[in-house]
Image 1 (cartoon, rainbow, N blue to C red):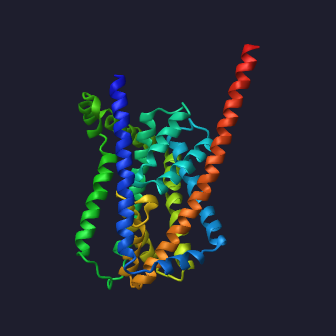
Image 2: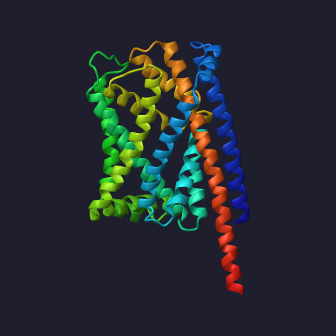
Length: 343
């Protein structure tokens, strides 16, 4: 048994190293392509133009975003982890997701929540996936709504009707997964016979419990959807503020379409370190599609991406300090309780 654990551990380490190496190659290849249109000198010049005020405002937006993310997780975990402790975990988790490639930062949520010894690994994993399902539903909703009201003069490389049908199908499948209450129990019973499907069983159970929770508690249902709405409204507002400050102005519908599409593209787990290359390519292509000159589109996207990374790292470092102080306080409290018990 120990040998199996060691082998799985070494395999995971090798797999992680391969992912990190591959992510560097992705970033290099994508930036090589981008540098065909934008000079490195222009990129440095744009970085030097970044103001401290813009970074501070970005930090405030991120803190608001993490606050609503924490409220949402706190609600789903039924308050088993103290809110402030969960807020620090949310900061660290989202910082690592933004920095590490292939969404490896997602593992930090599982590690940090289970480290509190108040939530099990299955509950933590199922909660994380449930949250992502809600996020995808909101992003798809934003995409579909904005897509329907886009200017008819915008020309896509593939027919609009085909784009709409594909995304509507995916959106419907996600809703069916959450709403198939009759199918879920029988599917869980079938999958539970095999150990390798236990995580999927737990996830389906979590979805089923979530549906029951939403149906039985009208006030909490409103809260969960309100928090989810606030999570993405705060992020959309940040992006709108940043791009508007760079003198790129779009209608609300157009911007909703651009950011929703870019965020859906970001769900693909193949990405470079801190998303460099992927973000520039997706956002740049969307801006070019809506009439922004290619050089301006790429320069602006690189500049805004760096602002986002700076703000993320600042908050992440604060989160690390708070996490260490929090652990120090918990250790002192345990030591104090132990001394009082022994005496």
